[in-house]
Every structure is written in C-alpha cells, then in structure tokens.
Amino acid sequence: MNEFFHRLHPSDRVLLVGDTRQHEAVDAGRPYKQLQDAGMQTAKLDEILRQKDPTLKEAVEQLARGDVRGAIANLEQQGRVHEIVNPQERFGAIAREYARSPEGTLVVSPDDKSRRELNSLIHREMQNRGDVSKDEHKLRVLESRQEMTGADRQWAAQIRYPGRGSLLARKQSLEDRSRRIRASQSGGPEGKPYNDRA
Image 1 (cartoon, rainbow, N blue to C red):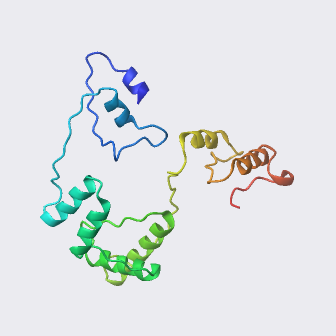
Image 2: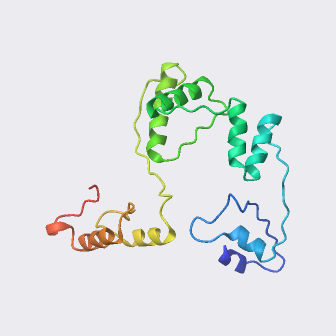
Image 3: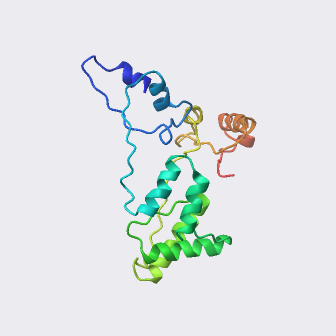
C-alpha cells in the first residue's frame, strides 16, 4: 500500500473503502486504522440497510456495538440459534437445511476439515434430492495457504526441486524447515529424490 501511495501524482484521487474492524492487513499492520490515526479524511456509514427484519436488525446493531452476548441472547430468543452438540448430527442437519433451501444460504465453517466434510455431505444430500447429478468427476484443487505470512511465502518460493515447482511449506517448526532445506539441497535423505508427501 505504501508503494502504491508513493506512485500517485498530485492530481490523482484515491477512495479507500474499508472497515477498521474488518479489513486488516493479511500480514502485520492495520492500514485503515493507521491512516485514520494519521489524519486521513474519513466518511462513516453507520446505517444498517441489509437487514430488513427489525428484530434481526436489532441483533446486528448489537453486534456492531460489540455487544456479542446481548446479540446472541437476542437471536436465541428469536429462535435463530440452534445448538447441536454431536458433530455428525450437526453436519447432517446443516446439509439437510442447506439442500432444502440453497438460494441465498451461506454455510460458514471455521476450518478446512469441516468445510470439506460439509461440502461432501451437502453434495450427497443434494444428489439424493435430485438437485445435483449423481455423475461424479474428481478434480485436483489447489488450495490457497491463508495461514502463511509474506515471510513464509518468500521462504517457500526459494525452495526448488529439479523438474518441480516451488514447495509451499506446511506449518512446521523452524528446525523442521531447516532440515527440509538441507534435505532438498542434498537431493533428499541418502541421495534419493526428496519427497514432501510425508
């Protein structure tokens, strides 16, 4: 962002749209907050328009004020919170509910493992309902590595294998990383080609 601003000419205008509570930097830093603290002219939008239902809008306003407990209690009173303790039962209920009314429905999952399981269950549920074809085609999908910092990505980009692309490192200790670098530079343990599938 700093480089972008330094490339601007005096006649250029920039409009930044963001939220100090939502749009923080991927790596270190808080650009919107820092720019506002430094005196950037700021217009604030504080009227909630998305929620039309007044009771739901009230809960969203509570969340916007930071009153999470009050908002959850409010949503519970409205019958909008359903707790299913058993993970298999919970995932099954989510899949059935999604398949029943997929339009405008968003399933949010906290991690990749549960996301994959939910996607599979929803897919099967929609197949059983006849909404999705039972013909299957498996595809390999590359997943972005959101947990990697800029420094991690730079480190990973430096590792090359003969005839292969860059290694994208998994979360691991620095000691393990240095072992992998030494192994990759020497061709792997005992001179064998290095295989990162362990």
